[in-house]
Image (tube, rainbow, N blue to C red; front, side):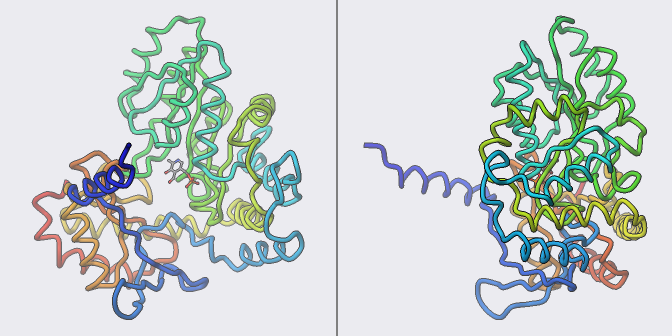
Length: 404
Ligand code: PLP
């Protein structure tokens, strides 16, 4: 008989051997205190630490008006949504949130999913399954949720070189012009912090009659007019068929969404299993997201503060000789290039300096490019930045040789 326990134990032992076994660090944030948090080590007393790897780029998860909206919705409607959207989950905060997202993006309609992952997976799987003979053109660095959706659809997938409109043009030129095709990529890549050449990719896709699908998970809220994202900032909203976004990053809540023309959004609403067969987002989460989207449509100050902090950290990293040159955003990767060394550096920074940076290992990034991903937020102050840079200065001589 098959030895299930032996199988699991062997696979876990391999992860340990390769030094990429994932250890979660018990970390509690405290509303009003972020980016400070409390870390509970496996032995000994809890410590105060500064978090440097959160996607809560604007600190909206602890914004008093966002918290008040969540609290009021829970008091008014209760906690869970009580069912799928069809059964009993189409509550007022969710309806209002979809209207607000469509307005923020200046698109006809929006649809909210339980996460950004599910938004990508469900939408791409549905489009690939339903469009007859569909071919995906997928950027080589696309997020796992997009890859999973495209794979599950069973449609043909052609992968183009990262951010390379010439390679995209070559692949599109080889396709039967009668076939439907979808060009899928991110506007802001979450591990390198680099940006897509939006005008070139969009123009190439349009020339070949492709649907354009852009993941803006790390861009919405933090970039573009009123936080509408990088597609809107480039004035390309009319040329992009689907913008996908996350509510759990700069918006500080949870969930994911797509926006686009009404017929496409209604088609996904009517066909996507990952939307239809799951309990709707709870009212408190939808209300929190709604308050956050509303506030970030009119408040540019937080975005300004975020990019001041990013510039400050970037200058400090440059002075240490480790400027993340590929990054054009709030995500500043510090490449270490070895999972063991990356883990050890993260441990030291946490234990000796109270700085929390999560090591990022394979399969999230390719082997040999393991890194610490530094994400300044609008709420880090100059003293915290000085502390981070001084700690890195202490350790970098040991790691400089392998830093990119
Ligand atoms: N798309 C990208 C580019 C991401 O980085 C992530 C998550 O980190 C997702 C989608 C999934 O978003 P969520 O965390 O809301 O599921």
